Length: 387
Image (tube, rainbow, N blue to C red):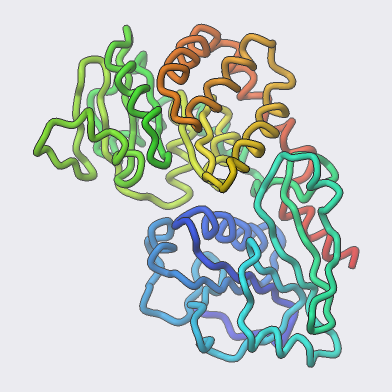
């Protein structure tokens, strides 16, 4: 049921979907948290409902507006499905271009909303000096740049209140993993087997890892959704065999389990239940850290290898409190995976596996270190209140 429109006080978030799930994944989590943890009315404008529906199955892509989990969702198209009404805050996610009608209306308001550009997450040092800076726009209104990050001087990291308690409760009961696997239609996983979730872009390094996992002394189960990760593994799949969600394929010690796409809550529980996670983009990257499990981050590629600078900056922070050998193994594993160096990826995987105890302990401690006492939504609300 859609609540009546209020005259003001709400927040607008505009999101243009670029890489299928990353941008909308972040903005959807932020919108939900602002509603649930801060009782803020949020209107989320999304230009691609079809991609959005992959992580929010209850979304009706035929509707111009609807309300789910307290968030009012609008299909952002030209012209807008209804006249935009200014609220307290206007967020353009990841430098998307606001509709001309919104920009025109902003210029005519005596009291325009606080206008923010939510930037991409980075662990690079420079974001601290840029976070929160204003920029005067051509319509005479200042837009502030909001940079998520890992330091107290940045915009923080998305993490809804109570998440860590929910994770600990889930991981503290071993039957939860068994129930999850049953729900996914996965059989044959023993408690001593290694469970790995895989959600990457295409990478020959993933194929090399899977080939090495076939020869492992312990059984390994790789949980893979349809899409880009599976595209990397054609060299493992017998000619003529077409895998679909629900299928499994055993190759020596390795079993591939093909998963359907799922919503964010179920994906979180999957990450909590696995021994190791391979993730991509920004939203899954953060959720892998909150899962308190070791992971590989397959970062979105950029021109001139700019993405490797972001990976290096995060790696330096992540391994800072690790012993040198374990830290170097993790760092080199992630770099090799992102550079599609299969030989080094496999070598570093084995080295990290030998230091698994140290890595597991670090993954457990890391979430509180990364959070720095306040999450992104909390800092964002405080930023707006300060004016």
